[in-house]
Amino acid sequence: MVQAETIASLPDETNKDPYRIMIVDDSAVIRGFLRRWLEAEADIAVVAIANNGVMALREFERTRPELVILDIEMPEMDGLTALPRLVQLDQAVQVIMASTLTRRNADVSLKALAMGAADYIAKPESTRVVNEKEEFHRGLLEKIRALGETRRIRDRKAGKVAPRSTPQPAVIGEKAASPLPKKSTFSLRPYEKNPTPKVIAIGSSTGGPQALFKVFEALKGKTSLPIFITQHMPGTFTAILAEHLNKIYDKDCREAADGEKVLENRVYIAPGDWHMTVSRKGTDIIVKLNQEPPENYCRPSVDPMLRSLVAAYGSDVLAVILTGMGHDGLEGCKKLSESGAVVIGQDEETSVVWGMPGAVASAGLCNGVFPLPKIPDAIENILKGRPV
Image 1 (tube, rainbow, N blue to C red):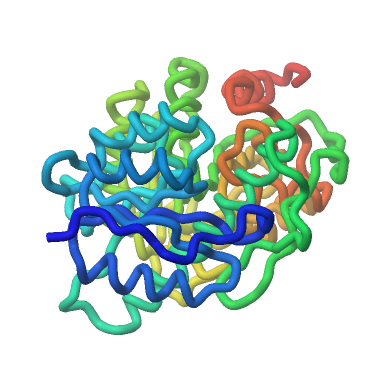
Image 2: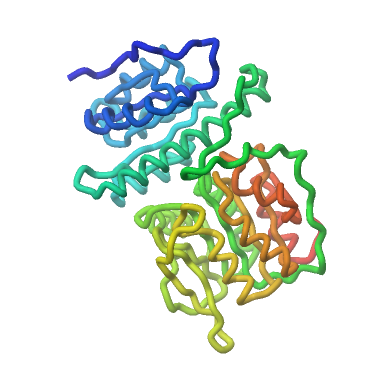
């Protein structure tokens, strides 16, 4: 079996436009269709292919890709073992973990995020229907472009590369999104009243699990309010995310269940493939799950959650928009802003991708924009009526 493959047509080193990708997977079938898909894109160049971690390290040093699609289960050296060694070779490398949708692989993928991976994607199985492969294809291209552009921006700021000749916007589905906004393009929205939140809502996507772990570790003992989380994830992953948060946080973290009553000291996570909303029933607030069409190409989506919270709680909502690509949550934050609710976002420097928080900040909807380590303190200060 051929363990590593050199791509004959490496991109011209003077042309910095194509995102340089290495594919690492022990399945020849997966390597084949990934290569065909990616080489069909003008802004992506596959510079190396390997079928295990040992050969991946060798090829990485030779070709220096910007992004790596890394399988979890491989012979000789698996993805979790190879990951920290790749990051050691290049701390700026953007690694996307790829795995089949099992509980074990979901758990390994979340551990990989804590070890330096930027994102993950669930691989389609050969027995699955065509539309699931199309969704995987679209999702992978989105992640490559968003993470690739984030790396380019940071490299330019660090003086590592010259500006690209033609800036390429990230692609959301089949529509081109605006380029990532700069910090200087937003202004903060002043508080319209002294905030008195009764519920906290968090929206996140790419880089979200890593951010959530850090936020909840620092948030212990600081609030008893119910917390709602919509993180873009498939179902198996959201169950594992709840388990990981339960080990970190001092409150009950769970996937939300349709029809359950909202209680204090509880964290509700939108299950994969389900929108999570709430509604009033007398004096109670009840969780409602639905499989209405995706919004912003996402299900679960942040926007339905935020809209329902505004309808149920009015201005007594504190929304936190963490790292993520795209602009999910933007429309919901507009509703929150109109109600007088408080919205804060993660800053560009600490975001894996400054898409979701950048969109909300650029629209002038944030009352504050903070680096990730400062967000727990900002939440506590807002809940206690202190300046942030």
